Length: 537
Image (cartoon, rainbow, N blue to C red; front, side):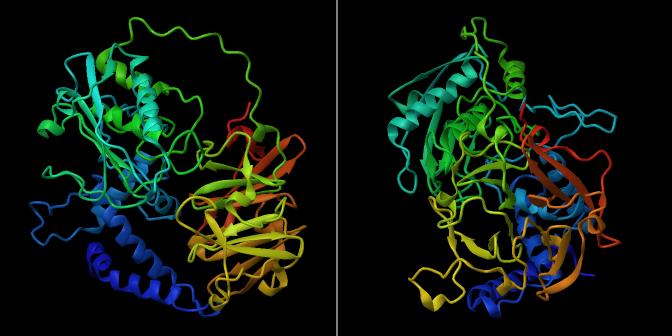
């Protein structure tokens, strides 16, 4: 049998062929790639990711003269990544792992979490204790008064100004100085600076070994610990100028979050495997009134100690619950790894850990999806071509992702010859052989299936063959479920059916049984969706 790595390399050709097929034909001519082809293409992507971020050696082992990666090592590396990110450790490139791989992140390699790793705790019980990781001596400053210099500023596509960069840098340093004895002072001469902040593209410095950036998405930035043998580059942070950095808004790449994270590296911190920590490798959108999470506070104080004169903060008045915690959602849809919650003419975006990615007050739906109606009833993203389908009443709308500033999605035109005219939407749901008044839709990309809910019934559609596999009652396909779900999504091997009501929303959870090709109900449900997922009071 050919090795996993060899299969990956050969399938680059398959990947190119699939791209040509998908983009060189009309919608009616596009044939979904077979499951094994897609899985093989995903192996190519995963293999490069695992090498890039420290989960696989870029050189063959001494006892492996062929340079071929054995399958057991591939599985072990994937499990390491899944363990670090808090995913189910399947050892397979499943949908959750793919979403993680495609998520923008810091370019610093992730540490290996072992019992010998400083700062990391692994209990013997079933529950894993997650904690920060510090680089340890000598990768830390031996003084407390540090200087910095913003060497240059980003140009397009960033919308952030030089003044906003400076403001975010000051705020980012303050996050760390508020909890430690460290002080940070800006200097005019970069040669006098302990920490230099530099923007650049691709091969952005002449320093040998400095990893190049990769364009929009992917790696956002990287940084160098003190005393890490990079010479003058020690303690510096580099930012990919191809990113769309923003200031104080809920779109683009939050520069405040990015620079605060990289400063953590310049002070001697490694990545943490705590999802809500600042030092988690994967980026997040802007958060107003951001404060340093407890995991990061404990990490930095383990190196430098606590601030002997912490700033005095005024008493915090009671905070009313966020608007989304008292909102009726007409639909919840998983799109590009984010939960989109729709209500009237607004939407809220959350990551799958429940972290808010948009404004607390919500954003206009049409900012993302032009001409989308109010109170959309159902939707799903199709796995093999990324098209997003929405339903309301007797109609449907189809969108595709667009790189760049909002709107992030555009209407899909079934006839490319119509361009530049507007695609003809809405269109009738019956054109897709689907019923009107759909209440929810659930897409299981791993199996090429879509579940369309209406009333007491659910229709199971085969996306490969574009036909109905079965139409049955909801509680038979999803044991224990109620009728009329108002939202649904599939994530990390589980299906979630959400039922919105006047006082919030409940949800049921179902696990996919690969042997039976069916869902099994999980005990202890329904539970409160707003509390469990959205962290509402």
